[in-house]
Image 1 (cartoon, rainbow, N blue to C red):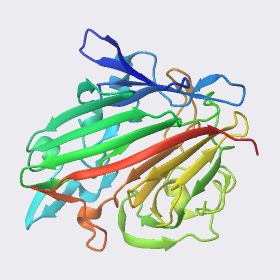
Image 2 (cartoon, rainbow, N blue to C red):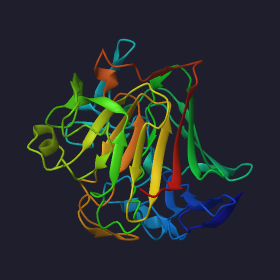
Image 3 (cartoon, one colour):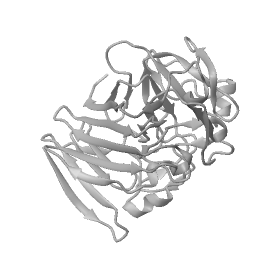
Image 4 (cartoon, one colour):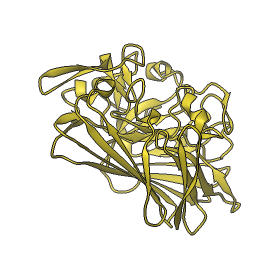
Length: 342
C-alpha cells in the first residue's frame, strides 16, 4: 500500500499515485482534484484503465465541458434560474448552463488547484478554501476530499466541509467509467440501481419537485439490464436528455450496493456504496467523439454521481443542502471493483 508523488507541471499541477498490494492503482491530480487514471484487474489478469480523460494534466483545462473525473462543488448538478434564497436573502449565481447554474459555475471546484497531502498507506488528502462570494455563493467554505485505495480493490472518496455562517454544499465526483477500458460504447454494460423513483425534470433538465415512480418503465434499473436496452424508448424525458439517461435516482434505504455496473467483455464489476440519498446516472450523452487518452464517442462512458437532491435549494419538499456554521459536512462514497463471471 503506497502513495507517491509523480510530478508537477510548469503550470503548477501536481499528480500523485495510490496503489494497493494487489496492483490496483489510481492517479490523481491537484487540478480539480481529478482522477486521471484508474487501473483495475480484468478477467485476463491484466490491468485496464476504466476512467476517461487526457494524457497530460494541462489538457484537462479544456475538457470539452465534460468535468472528467473532477470534484464538483459547491453544489453538484443544476440550480434553476441560477439563484436561491437562504435565511431570507436571495443569492445570484453565475449562469453557465443557459439561464441555470451547473456544477459550481464558470470556475467551480473542477477548475481549482487543490493542496495535496499524502497520508498513511494509499491515501491522498486534497484541500481547498472557497472564499465568500465565489461564483455567487455566500460564506467561506473549507473543503477536503480524501481518496484512498484498499486491498479489497475499493476506491474510497471521503468528503468533508465546514463554513463560518451559512452556505450550500453538495459535493460529488464526476468520474466517467467504461469497464471494457476501450471506451467504444457503454451500452452493453449491465446496470443496476437500487431505486424505484427519479426526480422529474423540465425542458432544461431542472428538477422542480415532481417525483416519478419508475417501476417497470425504461428508467427502471432495479433489476439489472444492459444500459442500452431501453435507451431509445419513446419517452419525453429521454429525448430531453439528448437521447439517454441524465437523471437523479432517489436511492432506496436498503443495505448493500446503491448501484452496480458489469462488463461481460472484461469481467469487471463495479459496485457503488454511499451514504448519500441520491445518485445521478448519466449515459455520456454530451460526448461527441473528441480524443483524449481514447476517442470518446456518444455514450461511450457512464457516470454514477452520488449526491444530494438537485435544485434542493429551490424545492421546499426536497431535503436541504444548506450547511451552517458549527455543522460538519461529511459523506463517503466507495467504488469497489472485482472480476465476476456470469
